[in-house]
Length: 259
Image 1 (spheres, one colour):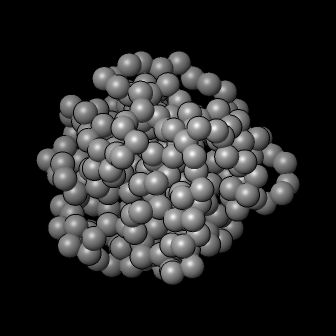
Image 2 (cartoon, helix red, strand yellow):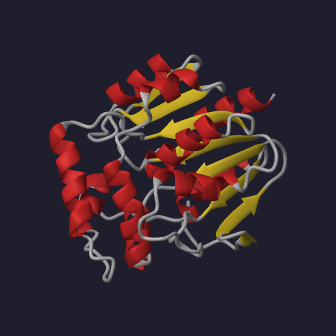
Image 3 (spheres, one colour):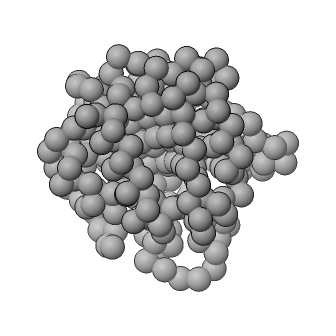
């Protein structure tokens, strides 16, 4: 799989990679990345679905939100793409956004898949992300090595290098705005999970130390039509590192929601 840049269309303030035809599947990436983080899913699933993969505000080629933007502001930016029934899948912060959109725009969302989603961080994990958020100046690019080591370890790989390039290339103020939201949130409320009308899939890696299997299982238990799936041998960047199984699970889920 290559992680080369793809052409984009403009959709309001968002730049969007569009591919394929059929039922719609919207893919939302995480902090510091861009639409190309979903290249493996775009390539595999566009034969069955119309894929929309936006750059989050302040990432890639999308216009940034104000510095004090909230999770709901990110969700509203994405919701502008929902001009017909859509299955939404989000990764990491993208999962936060996907769950927010599914909760607040239930008539537009046929199903929601939350990949590597956090839910009720431990005290130490909460302090770690808040300390990192407080350290970001918004004026310069933060050293990505610690993040890359958490995601991939120290071994070089095309996936690691692609993420390094994206993290370095992200607008510092856009990154700070998004990461501040990511650090301040602690996952969806119990009430919003219980109120979800659509099917909900919670998918994470067995080796994920931050968006743990227990978190996905807890959210799935609360959602009335929730399912948890754990990918063996995978950690945080499983859409890239374990794309075949992620593609299969997403295809089955989205196909079932849109049939």
